[in-house]
Image 1 (cartoon, one colour):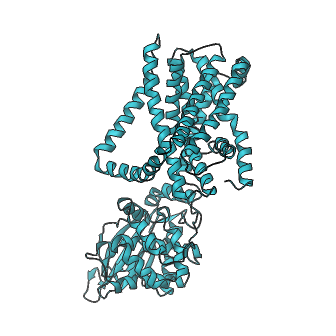
Image 2: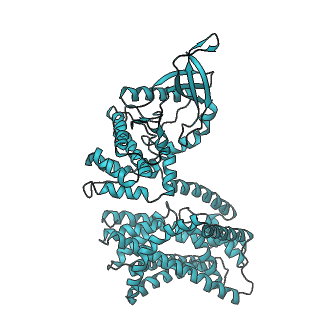
Image 3: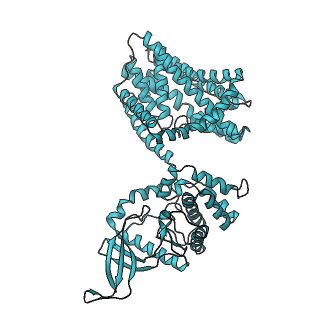
Length: 575
């Protein structure tokens, strides 16, 4: 027997990374001539070192981000990759699962290997139009169940790897990404991938009906928490981004079939993408802050600052927490204990050390309200309303103080050149979002749920003038305390800047800090405030010293106090 014909075929969209595919035909060959007789069709996959290296970075990224059992293994060489795939094919055959048998394994030179499989005629689920019947869906589930019964997983159950033959039987292609002696978690991950892929191609209703028919309630309880995009195949995640309603609908349908409250969330990531971005941004921020410290030593800043103004600045920094407590209480329907609410705001100063600005504090407030028996939707809406009001007041104060500063200052504030480029970039991004239909849909999907929660709560608060005054007054007190604290820090070095200019500088720097994903806006706030005070007329060295003192009083000094407050609140079960 020899190869009588061979041609390269298009790589499926979920094809094996680091491989090339061919369709080959074998037959009897005598003296270099093809003789008549039985022929065999083969699917040939060629693996080489160059192509395998192309996907190595992505595989390493997944292994770092996800837990060990969730991330797929990353073979170190072509030999290890091919041997692993051969082992999994033999294991699938031994389990009785319908999968193409391995016919040949050949090494081709020092850097390439070939696997040849029996070719099956049929149509993949991805190319099936219209969709498959209930009997075919049952056949797909049964094929996967045979694998799992022998503790073998596929781990790549995408539509391109599920083949349906002419007689309605399912064949599982390329079972080389899976596991032998699989754990319970790996088997459940396989089922979650299958359910998500079937939901995309036959709809969430039929996928949920199939799962309820084939799986027990205990199995569904175990699989439900794993229906997370992060653990699904790359092509499946891409498809779900365009059909955002599929996965929530599938979860909802499956949840109706299990006992209420039995589903427990499962953490599958070593490190979240947001946390990873925060860490990278923090390194950049630390670099920027180190550059500022080179220009002004922290010890020299403390020695040269007037201690009386420093104490005044510290008192104003403490006042910000009173304002934050009032701002939260004003937008919550329940009556909150003032000092306990104050401790929560102080505890937020420790949380912001490890989370982006305005993110950790909001999560802490929601948790606190829930512990005070405020329903979760009301807690989220109250904190969201407080943030929306704070945003509106922030923008309004920038406009007001900018107008006042422009009419009263002898020398108007001239922003640095880079600020114009940043502003132009923001405007360009905003115009792009509004111009593209996809951008408008994304914005609508993000904003509509928030407005749906906030607007009813705003109407309710508007009917309680005392609560509204408490909330808005707290926000104004919070902002005014920060502005006066920055002015006190400038005065500590024997300089003065018009209060309207200080307000514009602080409000602008705070807005930039809330956008940058670093803890407390670290790095970005320092750079923005320094540039603003310099533009307002301060010498650059004095501006750096004033900003460092301001950040010391409002960001670093409260951290240990916040840790004590957080520990106390955890002991009293308030968080």
